[in-house]
Length: 452
Image 1: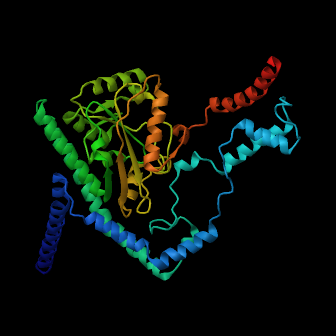
Image 2: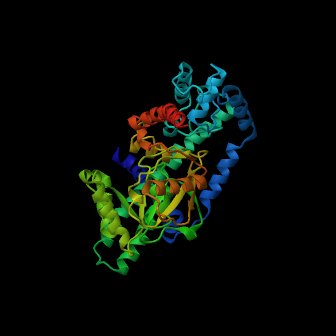
Image 3: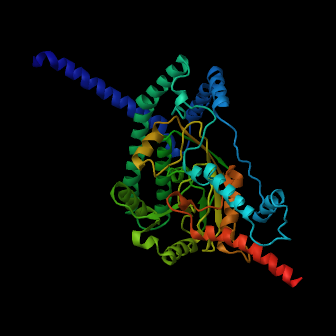
C-alpha cells in the first residue's frame, strides 16, 4: 500500500510546492517590489474601471432604480435655518394673533415649537445617522440593504454568486497574505533599523521601511487612492489633522508620507507593532492613565513639534469614526499648541466598499475581514494649505475653521455635534442652552420695554 500511495504523495507535494512558488512569485513581482519603489502597474485602476462597468449594467441599474423609486420616499422634514424667536412669532401669529412684542409672557402655543422640534429630532436625527453605514443609491453586490433585494432576477443573482466566489475564493486569501506580509515586514525591519545609531541614515531607512510596509498594506485592501495638491503635504514640525472614517485612514495617509503617530499603548499584536515602530521613529505613545492628563499630552505634543527634524504628527481630532458623510466637532487639544496645522480631507467612494468602522457593531478583526472581502477601497485625499491660529482666535474657533475647510473640500456636512454622542448622552448644557434662549427672549423683551 505504501508503494502505491508514494507516487501520489510525491506528486501532491510537487504540485503544492509549485503553487506556493507561483503564488509568492506573483506577489513579489507585482505587489511587493512595486511597493518598495512606489510604482504601480495600473492593475488596480483597471480593476476599478471593470467594476464600474459591472455596476453600470443597464438592466441591473434600471431594475434597482425602479424599485428605489417605489420604496424610498422623499424627506418629510424640510428644515430651514430659522431662529427660535422667528418660529415662535410665526406660531403666535397663526394661533392667538398676539405678537411676541405685544405679549412677551409665556403663551401655551409656544409648546408647539418645542414639541415639533422634538419630533423632528426623533424622525430625522442628524447625529445618530452619522454612526451607521452610508446609504447607497444602488446595490453594489456586497450586501442587500433591503430585504426586497433578496431576489430581483436570475442574471443578477448569478452575478452576485460569481462575485462571492471571486471575493472569498481569490481576493480574500490574497489580501490576508499581503496583510501578514506587510505587518511582518514592518515589525522585523523597524526592529532592525532601531538598532542603528540616531542620524540621517537611520531616518532615511526608517522612512523607506515605513513607506514600503504601508504600501503593501494598502495593496492588501486593494486601495485605490487619488492624492490631490501634494504641494501642501504636511512638513516636519507641524500637525496633520484629518476627518476620521476608519482605522485605515492611517494607512491611507502614511502610504504617501511618513508621520509620527499618536495613541494609547496597547497589548498583544498591536503592542508588538507599536514597540517595534517607536524604535525606528519617534512616535508618541501614552499609557492609559496618561491619556486623561491633558497637560501631559499637550506637553508631549508641544515638545515634538518644536523639533523641526521630527516628522509631522498625525491626529484625528474627532476622536471617533464618522460614516464618511460629515465632519463632527474637533477636540481643541491639538489646536492649543500653536503649531502649524496641515488639514487633510479624506473622502471614500461607497460604491466599492464601506470603509466606515462601526465599533459598537463590529470588532476590529470582523471589520478588517469585511474590508478585505469587499470589492475595493477607493478614496480621494486632498492636502489643504497650512493654517495657523490667527490673532484673537481661541483654540475652539481655530478648530472650527479648520473643520469647515476640511468639510468644504471633501464635500462633507459640517456639524457642531460632539462625536462622543456615539456612546454618550447629550450634555445638560445643550438642553440648558435652549432654555436660556427662550428665557432671554421673554425676559429680555420685558427689560427692553421697561427701558423704553
